[in-house]
Image (cartoon, rainbow, N blue to C red; front, side):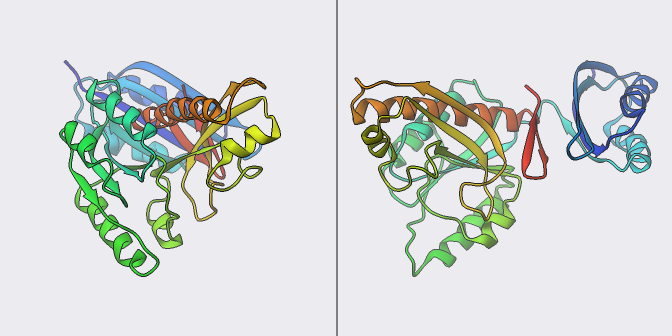
Length: 282
């Protein structure tokens, strides 16, 4: 059976992009299995994700042929093995619903990713992590040792060749230098009440204000706190009968679903950056 690949690309929009890509693949006896594209009128950019069976031509030769087309069309492009499982590292603190959900999906085979472990600034979830046969790294953080612990975290990311870092309610602000090092490969989850309801108890504040919709947002991590390109959002309807505790539970359910979708789409190569926005090919 031939290998399967995923090609992603972004380039200035012009006539003939799809023809150039599909023609090259046809000429290499490749069979397109799925393809999606988007022309963004605001930025003038064109985005495409194509999954195909590679025929009899080696990957190196496919990449060489495509490099010529990409140069002509000013493309930024990547060619991925469709069966590769991206390496993921999860960061967590003391709120464990998102971590537990991700670990369940991983161990149940519901997520095409290679989880390499959990890093936490508290020891609370060591037993949970090891129950899933994953390494647990306890890196307590304080104002005095923050730089040292971030260096240890980055060393771990590099040594494990981590392709995605997931902040599963990790209650620490990453330094600008670490954000830059992880640009485009770190995803965070937060409640959608920001910036209206900031602080440690956003659901309690929302309850006091009588909100009717609660939600969550998954986004890329940037130096601008909670303002990175948005990957996924969702909401749940609540009403006056909800207590603060019930609202918190409903909100946590949404957070789990939104974060898992974002991680899944990332590891399936469905998320492309478009400046401060994202293109997500579902």
